[in-house]
Every structure is written in structure tokens, then in C-alpha cells.
Length: 338
Image 1 (cartoon, helix red, strand yellow):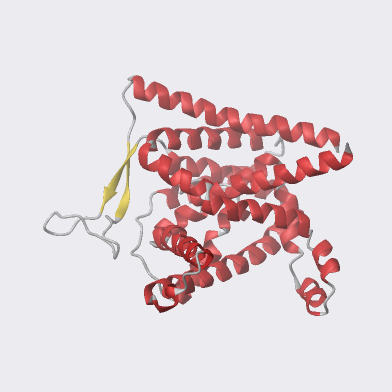
Image 2: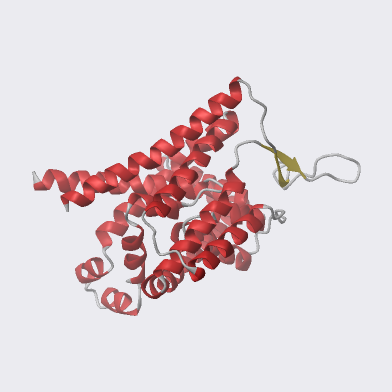
């Protein structure tokens, strides 16, 4: 029975990784929220904190088992496995759904964000002047980011490394969407769509025994971009985890209030009823990027009129809220078994 339960726990951990990976891919949604709501946020942060000098000494000295145990390798490995699988599966499904059912997808996410606010806030009782100030600053920062105009795409490798560091903020800081930050920096399509597709195509060709991509300079450049972005992401994960571990240990109430504020502020990003505003040239034509796609300038948000589509969207908001509540119920049951 114990071995079966352990196996089930592993499966659920991979599924949580899938959820985090999918959330990180969607602008306005934070993978950290998934970790927070599913009840493994602090373990995630403290496990990442273990990737330090001592861990590298164990690795260099060939003490692989000690290294694996020291960094909580089973937990991180299964979680990251789910994230990687998500980038090549769940995230592609999300891309399709956002393209064809944009309103309903954003509605589900909006409901999930509301559910996350409810979940984090319901057991938080340490409200005082400091935590109210922290909450307010979190809301202001979240809203400010929501209404910034995106920059132009930039594939300079130093900038790509910086984007990698920033992009993982959504994994370590609930409510702070790394993918939306990439939109603001102008590199969302380059780093989370084009480069990932280039890697997927490369793997597919290698499996078929086709190595012609070696002569494809554009493909090689894209793989370099993805490699540097990944290196930046790993650097950001380790760095953020050390900082957040310290903050959570010494300023947990203030940090929790700020997280609630970030998540409230992110509601502006995932508001379902919005129209995309594209950049225009002086002659009125759409400004296109290197792939011939229209460049997003910002979003026009509006209050919807009541009709069948709006009612369906409200239903999906309720569904999103219910998903978070369901995760909470599952998490409580798991904690009772421990």
C-alpha cells in the first residue's frame, strides 16, 4: 500500500509540474501560484536553495547519490520533468485554445487567479500596518506591469540571458508572471515559441536520422538563443530561491501580503474581455516583426455586455475558481495522510 501511495505521489508531482509549466507559458499566469495553491511552494523554494556550493562540491567529487539527496533531487526531478513535458504538450494545447477560444481560456485563468487570492488570504490573519503597506505596494507593482507597452524583439545573447533570469520570476514569485514580463521585454515569441519549436523540430529530425539542421544557420542561432535563455533561467532560479528563502524565513507575513498584492494586480493582465492593440506604421498598416506577425502594443480592456457569450465566460470563471478549490481540498487530504 505504501509503495502504491508513493507511486501516486510521484505521478501527482509530475502533474503539478505540468501545471506549473503550462502556467508559466501563459502571459499573466504564474507557475508560482500553482505551487502556492497546491501546497509545495516552500519545499520548492528550499529545495532550489540547496543548489549551492556544497552541492557542487558533492557533484565534482563524484558523490552523486549524496548530491541527489542533498538537493531533494527526486522532488525537483519529477517537478521539472512535468514542466519539460508541458512545454512540448500542454503548452501547445494552450496555444491552440488561446487562438480559437481566447475569451474562455482567459476566463478560466481569471477564475483561477480569484481562487488563488481566496486560498492564500483565507488563512492569513497577520494584518497590520506593515502587511497592508506590503499588500498595497504589491497591487501597485502588479497593475503597473499590466499596463506597460511591450518592447521590440531583441535576440542579443546578453539580453536573452537577462530575459532568462527574469522569466523564472513567475516560478518563484506567485502572481508575478514571467511570460508576461517577456512580452513587455519583447521576447515572448522568440523565447517561448520560436526557440522551443526549433528544439522540437531538431529532436524530430535527429530521431529520423536527419542532421541537415547543422547547415541551417537560422536553426543553430535559435538553438544558441534557447541555450543562453535556459542558462539564464537556471541562474535566476537559484538566485531567486536563495533570496526568497531568506525573505520567507525572516519576513513571512510581509512577503505573503506582497504575494497577495501581486496576484490581485495580475488580474488586470488576465481580464478576459480585452482587445489586442497592434502597433501601426505612419501609413496605418500593421507593424510586423521578422516573422511577418503583427507586433502587440497593448490591450484595450472593457466591460462586456450581457449576452450568451458573456454568460459562458462567467461559467468558465466559476470553473477556474472551482479548479483551485479542488486543488485545495486535495492538498488538505494529502496533508492529513502525512
